Length: 131
Image (cartoon, rainbow, N blue to C red):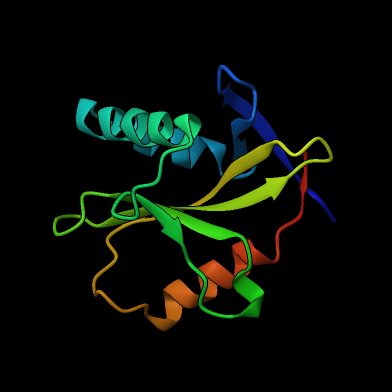
């Protein structure tokens, strides 16, 4: 069964767009808008993504196995809270890159991935979205 997602923003050149998982939307938005610091970091990361730039310290693939294909993470405050927004990347039929923010994971503890984090990443990898 395909999951539903909702549009947030599209790049000016319309080659990239960011969506949010409808089921997890409230939790994710509450996290982003809980204070100015989170909102500012989110806007900074999304601006980089929509511009087509790369910054692996802020956004990178979570390519740990075949189940995790096209899973990425927005990285908030590395070395501090170390929160993650796990995302699924999709290319539509016209070639547009769609990034769906899927799951919030707070307080990643280590540089390596724990069993819990691997489980979350594999779960996102199995999601199919209706865009």
